[in-house]
Image 1 (cartoon, one colour):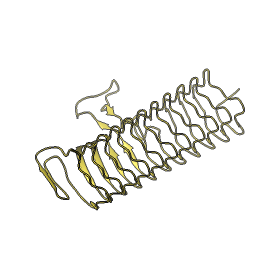
Image 2 (cartoon, one colour; image 1 turned 135 degrees about the vertical axis):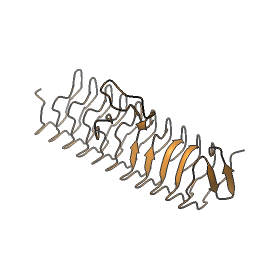
Image 3 (cartoon, rainbow, N blue to C red; image 1 turned 45 degrees about the vertical axis):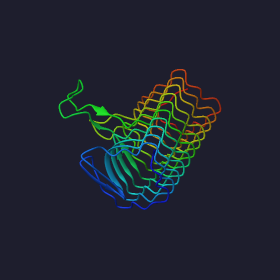
Length: 257
């Protein structure tokens, strides 16, 4: 039976797969398994945890500010209303997770190398992206979040706030975010860095992309109907088959209708 840890205070907890002390749960030499646990409303601020499974866990309205999570599996977890301000999440799995209304302001969600000696054809260490495929991020606050390499394929980001977010490659070793088939309708993306993002077949209906950077972005067959692209940089972007009906294109760079 999954533990019921509602409203518990684990602020500042630090643990790994070798020596763990989590409230009244003491686990040693094994990875922490909180699959299906009820952590709704729990105070997990400053949490430092790695190599853990929280698959299907209930983290509704949990406080995860300043949390550090590495290789944590949150597949299907409910993080609606959770506060992840300034959280750092490396090689995280949020596939199918519910982050409706979650606050991820200034959070960092990134991938990391598979292992030290696996390289791509350019000689760089290959990246394993953070997995947010099919995640529900409706209305989530991702302003100023660093999301290089994150995979949002099929995710729902309707009404999400990504103003100032960085989804482009931050350096030679990290690729841009994957947003293929995602829904960003009415999302706020003011000044967001979307350099080289893969956003094919996505919906950005009514999205606010004022002054967003979309250099070399893959935007084939995406729907920008009614979107505001004022001052956006589309230099080198691929807009093959993209729908721009009613879109505001004042001052757009690198695009000739």
